[in-house]
Image 1 (cartoon, one colour):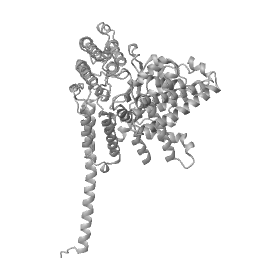
Image 2 (tube, one colour):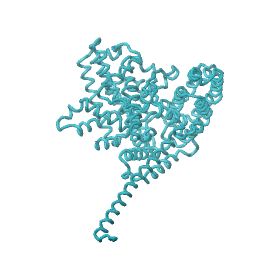
Image 3 (cartoon, helix red, strand yellow):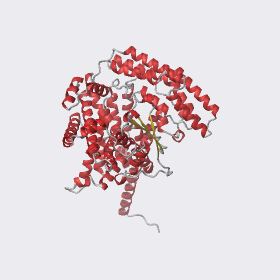
Image 4 (tube, one colour):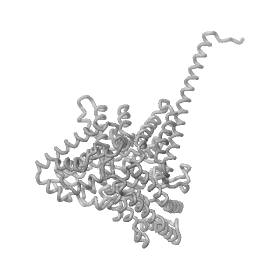
Amino acid sequence: MKRSLSSRQWTFVLILFTALSILTLYWYGRTHQDSKFRAFAQAFFLEEIQANPIHFHYTIDNPSAYGVDESSLTLPVYQAGSATDEVYALSLTRKNLSAIDPDALNEENRRLYELLDSYLAAAAQTAAYPYFSEPLSPSSGVPSELPILFSEYRLDDKADIENYLSILTQIPGYFEGLLVYEQEKAQAGLFMSDLTADRVIRQCTELLDASSVENGTHFLEITFKERLQQLVDKKILTAGEAASYASEHNRLLTTLVVPAYDQLADGLTLLKGSGKTTCGLAGQENGREYYRALVRLRTGSYRDMDEIKRLLARDLRFHYESLLALLTANPSLKDMITETPSLLPEMTPEEILADLQSEIGEAYPPIPTGRDNAPIRSTIKYVDASLEAYSAPAFYMMPPIDNICDNLICLNARDTEDDLALFTTLAHEGYPGHLYQTVYSKRYQEQENILPLGNVLYYGGFVEGWAMYVELASFDRAIELAKESHPEAAAYYQVCRLDRQFRLGLYSLLDIAIHYDNASFEDVQKLCYCLGISDSANLAALYQYIAEEPCNYLKYYLGYLEILELKKQAAVLWSEPGQMTAVYDDTAFLYRFHSFLLQNGPADYRTLARRLGAT
């Protein structure tokens, strides 16, 4: 006999069905949003890395794994009147991102969503002032950057050689676009000063010297032939093929690249006089607004300018008073600063890096094991002598995100002559600095299957702040190595560290004074005189550099101070009441804090503070 359900049973079934339907829709909504975001993030990542074939080659080792034909990529040539296009592109990207509900994403995707949204907003704020950026900056612009990138361009096979030579053929058009942009800057009243223009013009003629290129003695010729020979040794090329490629390389440099540099120099010469005298951004209309937006984008700090000033001023006062007290208690240290004695044991750069790596110890987490268990290798080399005047004291060449085993650190011999500078520089660039932080982050992302989105979002304040944080900590290791043979090393290295922090803090405040408060050279000179700095020539060079490179010192030192502020926040969150000081120096606390930074960065500091509060 067939039995029917009672009304009570029917009610229960309907409730159950409704609940299951709601759960199913909820589950589908969340998984659908996650899939939608991952597709969006992957598309954004691919679009960004394909925007420039040089940067693509340094970012990706295996293009086919990403479905990219590297040979089809071309340099982004600026078109007249397109300076404002970036604002629209960024707003459109952010609008498309807003179609995804962040609350429906899993925790990791929600974090990436927030990171991308904040980055796009910050980038849009600077893009709203399209003619303030300077791609030809003497210290970090295209003319000096390209030769370094070309000299280290990875050549693994014939396809890499062909792609590299193809990029050389595109340099004339690329430079023509840059000159068009500079002409538009001039029309907007924002062209560089004559002093800056002269420096760029001199760069163009010195870096690509026609005679050295023609006779094959230019460092680009030499390094290219060295990489070709490596392929010959591996049986990838024949000697004849290598000679043919070397000849074509010389032809392209001689007939295309050198003339492009000359034409750029000529174009800048014609524009001289259309810019203002060397001054900060505050001297330009809307300059202060642009600088405020630039500080946020470059440093990742969301503090207002007054708060940043107070943070830097407190730090400067502390280190200035500490330095004076130490020098007063040890008068002989003043002579040591002038003499820069060698107190460390004699070590090669490779031996220093190995020591720093071995001494990371329990305060830093070990680099996660990669899927292939491949070891992390590092190479140290010095930049060519012709680049020393235009190169940073040192720089770390980031490896491709899909092959992080081989890492390169380049040193500038002119700026790393004394042993302490070399030691702390290698801590900054190597272990536990850029190399360690980069490899750890990439391995962690691989281990946790995190989208590579962060690799196309540049957070200079975090990257350089971390490197500054560990560089200053490396003075303690230097003291350990030197004090056995030189008991005076402890006090001397403490003075060196205090002086380093004092100067970086001062330069950061001067950055704000020049670009936000419109301080003149005379204003800067008076302030520095009060602090005992009276070398007019050095001050003039410092003023010129800061005027040309807004936010550069802030990227390093404000980034460092933001890490210290996060550290204080973590000490409060992770300690028992009244135990903050003890926890702050505890090895377990440091291990946890460093792990937090490495696993959640690079990021802006507002995002990091939120994540820290959620731990």
